[in-house]
Length: 376
Image 1 (cartoon, rainbow, N blue to C red):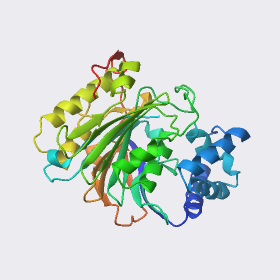
Image 2: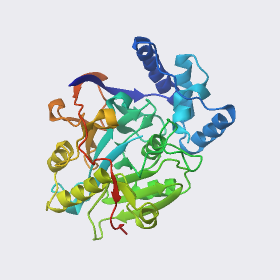
Image 3: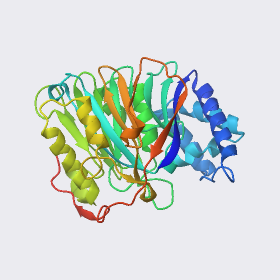
C-alpha cells in the first residue's frame, strides 16, 4: 500500500486571492520535492494571448486566479502550467439517477475517476467567489475541477470520450483550439444553475477534449453531453417519463458520434454494460447502492488499481443534489472510509492520510472491441 495525504480546502475571496494562496502552496510543495518540481510545457506568446481571451470569455475570473498563482511563484501568468495544460487525461465511469429511480426521491450522481495517484491533486475544495455560484468539488492543478455540485443544485461529472486528449506526450492531439475538461466543469459549476442553462452555455463553447459529461439538477433533469473531435451530441432525460437514469464510460454513446468511433477499450464497454445491468436490476436506488458499485473491484464493480498503467481509481464520489451533499472515498478503497460534505458548509482545511493500492491489470483489459449499439 502507498500512503498519500488528501486535503479539504475552503477557498473564498477574490479569484486573485484564491490563486495566490494556491500558488504559495504549490511553491512550498515544489521545495519539498526531490530535485524540485518537474518541468511543464509553456505556451508561446501568441497561443498564450488566445488562451487568455478564451478563458476571459468562457471561464470569467479564471485569469485573475492564474495571475495570483503566478505572482506567488514569481513567474509570468502565461508561464503558469495551467495555461499549457488547459488550452488545447483520465478514464472514468459516471451515472445519474432521477427521483423516480431513487428511494429518497432525490437526484443522485456517482462517478469513479481512474488515472494514476501521481497525477492526482487529492484535494476537495469548496469555492466561494463573489458573483459566482459556490461549489464543492475535487481539483486539478488547483484551479480546475474534475466533478462537483453547486449551491443551486446543479451537479456535473465527466469521463473521457475515447482516448484522452491533451498537451502531454502520448495523448491524442486536439482537433481544435479549445478548453480542457477541467476548465469546462469549473465554468459550468460557477455560472449555471440548471441543466438547461448548462447546455445553453456549452452550445458555442470551444472544447478540445473528447468528453462525456453528465449534467443533472435537483429538479429531476439530466443530460449526457458528448464531444468528439469538435462535434457535439446531447441526450436528455427528465421527470416526464422514459429513462430515469443515464450513464457513461469511456467511449462515445450517442448516435452519430458512436458511429464515428465504433470501437473502444474492452474495459469501457464492459463497465458501461455492468452499470446498466446493476442499476437496472434495482427498483429504487440508494446512495449505499452507488457506494457499493463504486468500491466493488473490477469486474464486479468499478474500482481499478492499475496506477502504473494510468488506470487506478484515485477517488469515488456520490452526490445528492437535493441535499447538496458530496460523499468521497479516496483511492476506491473501503479502508479509506467515506467522508460526507455539504456545499452549504465551510470546509475545515484539514488533511487525511489515505492508502493507494497498486497492481497489474487483467489480460485483455485494454484491448479494443466493438462498442455495441448507440443510444438515442
